View: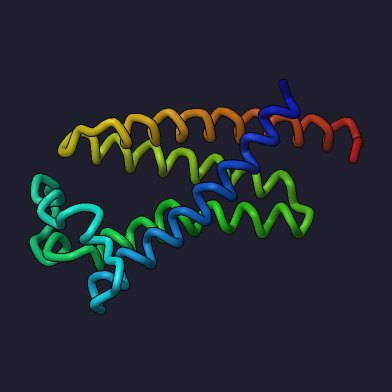
Length: 148
């Protein structure tokens, strides 16, 4: 079970780190340039209308894309970098931060734009937080006992 927690925590860092950065950058690029395949081809910007945000943040996908990259992408990438540098405990702590941010993001979104995809990501966020917290506890316990 402990190995599964560590593995899932790593999977989520890769999955959300890559997906959030790619999709966030794609959303921002779609707002700035005419792309052959734009984010607007996947969903209309009017989908953002119910969100209680200033109008300039809902007129295109620039701000939502930036938010996605910063809120979901960056914490997961930081966790990956720390992991590859050998600081497992800090990596798992950043995984907890990323999971908590994903939970907050999806709860906020579902309050105004209920949808099945957000429910899926909410479940992933809860699982990421739980797996990363478990992995943090395991890493801390190993340190206390002097194990590698």
